[in-house]
Length: 112
Ligand code: 5GP
Ligand code: ZN
Image (spheres, rainbow, N blue to C red):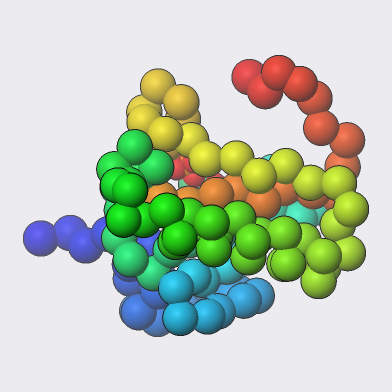
């Protein structure tokens, strides 16, 4: 049975360039960067998407946002975008909750 790609990265079964790790989160470089800085902020716990989270995940979700802010500061990004694609129609291609942390170039709004 094919296993979740990001769970495999969390378990170090697939290599990734990891820039931060703690008990609950892993942050690594996106393999197809869309900006000079393009990191993925991922919970170690598997959730299919943000919509699969429950009230019991509130602290984890807060932790992921704080982690993104700290990593952005560590890599000296004062402006950045933090985004999650929830569902195929929004562009989600990996069914393990992740936040894109993008920075290092001007950003347009709204995104396509
Ligand atoms: P989504 O399209 O689900 O919002 O984002 C998935 C992201 O995962 C994409 O930006 C894609 O480039 C990235 N990605 C897909 N496969 C891999 C991989 O094997 N390693 C890493 N580091 N990133 C990946
Ligand atoms: Zn997973």
